[in-house]
Length: 543
Image 1 (tube, rainbow, N blue to C red):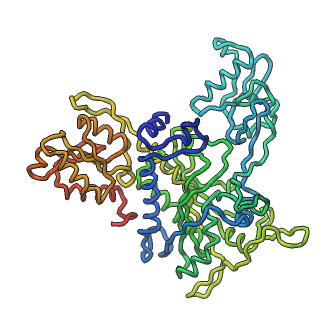
Image 2 (image 1 turned 180 degrees about the vertical axis):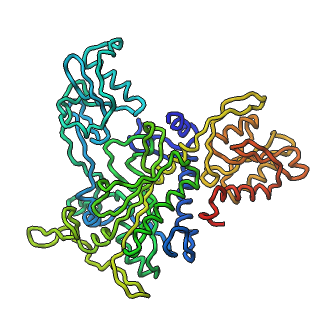
Image 3 (image 1 turned 90 degrees about the vertical axis):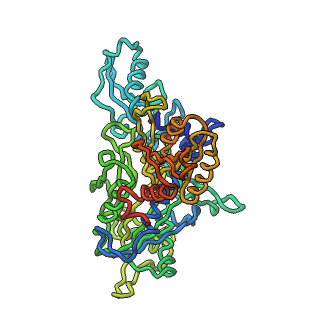
């Protein structure tokens, strides 16, 4: 993971936000190549799920044909939206504070290990990544008990690290940044929504929140979409946009951050067929990641156990990836596909859901009026053919653009050996992106800077630029230029030489195989276009 992070900064994929001022934790900037990669991930999703979706055909696994459309909702919304959705009351993480170091931690992210020495048993917590936690725990324990490194065998450890949530007695806990026991507070709830204010007056009525998800904008516009587009159920509404969560302990590069981008679909369907649609979207979204290059063994689909499900959900599955920063055998969430029932539409229509009661009940205040009451608008649906009226069920595939981008980066990172300009084997670093995702599709090189080659190369560069993102480079030996393009994931390099001046042919080199062949410029265009649609993409992307 350290190599990937280093490459990201060196080659302009990702920078630490506000780095010249020391950096802002949990915030990252995408550089020139990173913004292209992220845009390609986003646009591939939109193209496959919305633009190129065939409304007239029944896709494999789908109960029937369906329509897809898009929205782009505001980040600032009426606070009542978040009260009715449950975010105002329920969108919390447990946090703990250290009275000694004055630092704050997310309760379920603090790990540690029980150790016994000198007749005392303590729980040593660490503030390190998984690969370094054993070393840090040993050093902390040695320091606490007054031992030296040679006395490590005097420490009697429990078998494995566990989460702090499994420890009930905090008086025996050595906090991550403390030298004393019992400095941690009891866990307390921490609302993850960012609060801000609108208007000229700063008072209680001006308080609004930065949206923690894009989904609610879709739900509150459900009736608008129905009325303005004449879509019929089943149909889906897609949205890509920024969301904000005040994470207590952001970590793992761009995996857990405070400002991130989501790509979400709310798919509205008849309750009678909702389970079939849940299975369809679960499998379709997994297939999308596989078609774009995530390997089977590092990618998995995990169904939630019944005790993991939200109170309104009858089924949720996570698409997970084995990121390099996780311990062996552990997976991190890429995307969740949830069967949300009719909870969201009913919440915005009627009122607030009490998790302890079923069905929906409206909570009353002291004056007898409903608290956090919904819009009062009828969000049910009447089928124009069968005349059946019902509140649609919702299937929600919700993924992160940043997490998907990080997963594709991690999967693409490869080290091998390749001959240099002199024929000697040297280590080669490459990013083996699917051509559809690669930030740069083609690099154009004149073999040497003379004999009219640069002029011809620039003309070819401009011709290819009409179709793809193309890079021009004439500096250094051609082998070094190849390696620079391999390292940023460019699938094809086109070299202009003496024969190009004579017959118009060029040499095209493949990034992964390093094979080279002669083609005309027109054939280069069709070759790259075919590669972009390759590896099973024909069923998803536009021709």
